[in-house]
Amino acid sequence: MDASEPSIKRALTRDLTQSEVDEIRDLLFAAFADDEHGAFTEEDWQHSIGGTHFLLSVDGRSVCHASVVDRELHVAGRPLRTGYVEAVATAPGDQRRGYGSAVMREVNEHISRSCELGALGTGSQGFYERLGWQIWRGPTYVRAPGGDQRTADEDGYILVLATPTTPPLALDAPISCDWREGDVW
Image 1: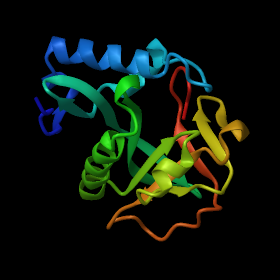
Image 2: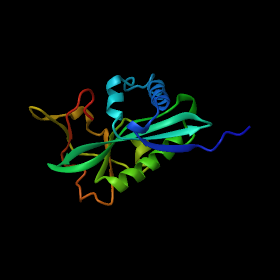
Image 3: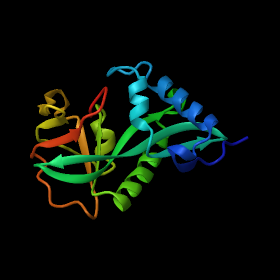
Image 4: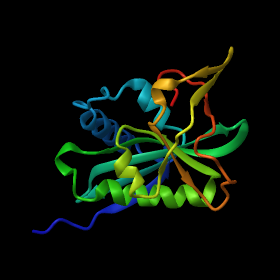
């Protein structure tokens, strides 16, 4: 019997069933279990909720996920309404089948319709670059309670996606994110 065609569900966190939440969490923790950049954490999970989830299923089984949360990034001091991509993962046994690309095309479309900018942090730049994302070449900062703090270890790992409403940007300008617990980017 052939596998059914993949389907992608788009839902706000509050509209996910408990079963879907459990499946997403299991998928994320499994996908990042052996990640060279570190395992998926509870803080990573908290960063991924409160926005829009994209969940790809095959034969009723969740195999790929990404979420987009609202953040405000500043580029050269200018605030931009940003769709920040979190928790992109494909189940270990289902990787390299195009599921991540399919989910990210949906994410790109969502961001392009609703945000001034898309952004994400990753060590997999090539995957996102082929989907239209660009590496931010400028210095990175976090807007912390005591003032801007440099996040030099993130330089070269932040990617952006221009949208129809993105103002002209210099990719080598300073960029900053709002403070949050855990990984700020």
